[in-house]
Image (cartoon, rainbow, N blue to C red; front, side, top):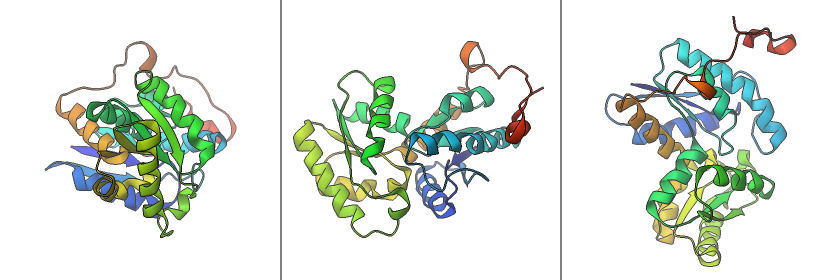
Length: 243
């Protein structure tokens, strides 16, 4: 089985971190390939960044399909381009926010999200409304550390732990969800310090894709997730045209 974990930003060091986390949980015989798009933003911290990350992400999903990948993970907590990726993919495609939120609802009655910048909280709330029952997401809390500083800032772990403790108390939640792929390596240590399940979406999504492939479940090509209708694209998007 081959699973491609696509980091929608173009920072290769983050892709390596994401790939390592995914490989750590993959089962025997599962090959995990971390992928960095050839174009897009260096980090995704706004709707603008997210929109401009999608073409590079889709190019990698299309390339993965052509090379025989069995499934894909979209490793950004905004789940950018998820529906579009499912249109062009035969195998399962899972977003890390989607996987983390579903997993959290299997571990408790409600969860709190610890994310990077406060300006992204609205997107997390939007996704929670899509993925889980009303009241499942009890709150979104930002550590206010930019994505590209997560690897180097020594304050990341203590700040996430402090926020998690605060969220559990203020929100009445049972589970913590880490709201950025760049936090993928923190899950076990944060859980140990705060005493509740802490869900990292990279590992959750990797295992969910692995499970779907094992079950023989593919992306339905009936109705909404059918292949895009053939048409011509122009300018910088010419290569995305279908025939």
